Amino acid sequence: MKNLTLLLIICLLTACNPSNRNSYGNSLKVIDVEDAFRHPEAFTLADLGKEQSYIPLETTDSSIVAISSITAMVVTDRHILIGARTAPIKVFDKTTGHYIGQIGQIGNGPAEYPNGTNFTTDPITRKVYVRISPSKQQCYDITGHFLKTVEWKEAAGGMIIAPYFLDDKIYTYVNIPTEQTNNLSYLYDADSGAIQDSLPLRWGGDIPAGKSKLVMPLAGAEMLGGMAYIVQFEDNRWTYGSQNNAAYWYHDGELCMKDFFCDTLFTVKGFDRLTPRMVFKMGSSGGFARYENSDVMEDKYIITRLMETENIIYFNLFKDMYNVDGWMKGGSNPPYCGIYDKRSGRTKVMKSVRIESDREEMPGFAIYNISTAGELIVCYQTEDLINAREKMPESEQPAWLKQLKEDDNPVILLIK
Image (cartoon, rainbow, N blue to C red):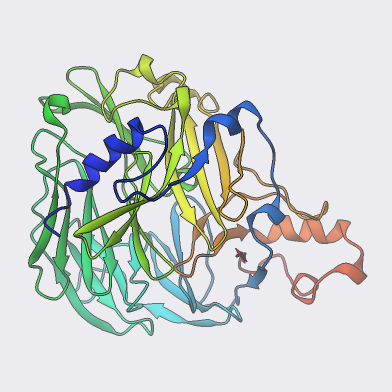
């Protein structure tokens, strides 16, 4: 684990290696975004996965929820959790949609949390972690029973540092490094808070000196995987970062990793061996540094989020990320989405994040998130589904759609 600096070395080797082979001699799978941009192609629900489950969430006086950019949803292998700023986190059964209960309470007490929008779950232990501060979280089991307060002394320096919880360990990641940043990532023990290892930052003199002069939150949190920011420093260079920990994810029994500003996806094996798995071939659309002047990014695309299922990798891209006027006016920085089919090796990209259903009557949708079991998550508002029902022959309506009422909770679609 002392060789975590290998990550940065491999990033450079991969970017310069035309044969796309890693240092272990293995061929890397190439996600050819460059070619996909030359031949844009719309895709539909069927391209995302053949297994599709619609889950109407039970509606009672205690279980009413609303899904929007100011709420949060996490789906595990067994449960659906939804939280809001002024309401505690609600838990539903993933198979039936039945309401189970809530996680803790909103408040300032020793077993409470300030709002229900900042939470996550451990894919292995299934514990629920709710944010109190950047390095302090309340820990509950899935029944809502308070377990403990988890606290650690964050050693990393930077503007936005986010944790990822896995098997009672905490992987923090610096999403926006500053001149105070010496390490990009730390590994902590969740029980003791002790540091177990770190990934040194090796950006040389690239980090801007001085403080930031503009921090701008971006609209469209759903397409960015949560609240995200562009930041301008005193030397006029910009960078991008997310409030969430987007660098790590757990897939098929392994910890995976990708930095916003590195085109390579890694498998983290014991943390003394970071093995490249795949690489995004961006061509002229890539090739930028973590800190750039805004004009450099006019024709460049940043991959803002990535979600991996058994058969595909889904990703979002934004062009001209540091165009402030575009963000202020809205619509000038259109999001793109893409998929890479791991079976065929084919990549598709389209200039939209709205994906059409395979049935003409059903509304289009955007991907909300991904479950810890590797299922893409879609949230359908009841009104949209009722409108779709009116266009669909009654004989073709599934039972859950026939029973849907105007005031019911949203319906969750899981795609695998």
